[in-house]
Every structure is written in structure tokens, then in C-alpha cells.
Length: 80
Image (cartoon, rainbow, N blue to C red; front, top):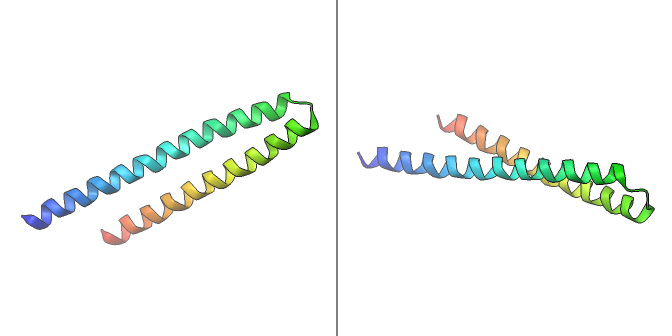
């Protein structure tokens, strides 16, 4: 009985962590879309450069979320 409760609790925590990753991915995608839109509208070289830096940072953040999600899914599959 105790093992079942611990398993459910662990699954609940894993599900919560997964939802947080997904939310981070969604937010980052929205921010990326906004950064691309700004990039497409700006003509000042300094603003364009700022957009490029922001886009690169957001792409790195999104890659982080993808890696974390893959690790989480691999751990979930290996634990059965």
C-alpha cells in the first residue's frame, strides 16, 4: 500500500514538473514570435542587433526546455 502511494506521489510530482516545462516552452515560443515580429519591423541597426541577441537567447532557452523534456521522458520510459 505504501509503495502505491509513493508511486502516485512521485508521478504527481513528475507530472507537475512536466507541466512547468511545457508552460516554459509555450511562454518562450510566444516571446520568440514577438522577437521575430520586432526584428521584421525595426530598421535601426541597434534595434535589429538587440533583436538578434534576444532571438538567440530565446532559442537557447527553448533548446534547454526541449533537452529537459527529452530527459524526463527517457527517465519515465526507463522507470516503467
